Image (cartoon, rainbow, N blue to C red; front, side, top):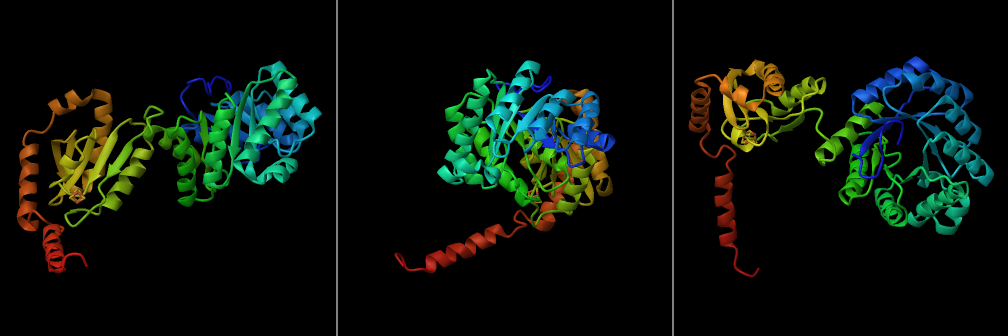
Length: 396
Ligand code: SF4
């Protein structure tokens, strides 16, 4: 348990992030913690790098909406101070607190207070002895974690979760695979120093999702060079998209647009994304470029809108319920999404505009008349391809 949040033992995978404020700035740090919690963080870590930070933690912990983990490097006394401040968990880096008596003093105090510790191994700050023996390899990361565990065991402490992060995705994935074979403890996943989005998001997702899909990992953190709110959002989105957490916000899908598109799909999708980002509506919502194919292609979405002849065709599970002017598409989508969540699908289908289906069909037919059934000229291209291939002598 990290405070009231279970980690491991079959509990839902949790999202973590870390504040970027000075921990001594209590109000600034709390404001960021609230923003992180609203974006989906279940647990937040704050640095405890100086005495003022530990004092800040004593003021932050009782006012935080989520449990706080103190991040400790180099100074074991700051770990003891953070425990005094009442944090729900410590993160220790075995690469930079190496004296066994100091490690054991912290573990003893954590044991007596019932506070868990994350052994946070990092490929970039390995214990030099271990690095000399194994190099920067998965084996080195696992050996470092096991060495720390052994110190903890000497004082009868095993309330532990472990991370073996690296900025190299393949190294990180292999290290966690080996670790999951070697220990029973809950694992905290992350690609460290992943960098700014979009590359940082891609790297983090590649590493974290690969492991989660193998059943490895109990809590995750995206380490992005960005506003940490992005980290919390990304973590939450990943877990929702893997079906590991219940959907809290909208899953916006949109067609990639093509020759049939009747609107600027990217602009409308971005506008909808911004508007839905401020709301907690557990729906899949589609923005589709044309009414010719949109409602059918997106019929698995709870709700969607498709453009056609300067109008938006609003549909629930593929059934057209209303036709609105093009400039009101996003507003209509949001209005319907809120009603759908409150009233349910049956009730909303029951009050569909009579005539909406006919109006959409008329727009669809009109577009087909103008564009033909092959607005993207695919069939014409297929014919050309056939001619080219037929013209080639066989076997060449
Ligand atoms: S056919 Fe219509 S819905 Fe499908 S990609 Fe093209 S514009 Fe979008």
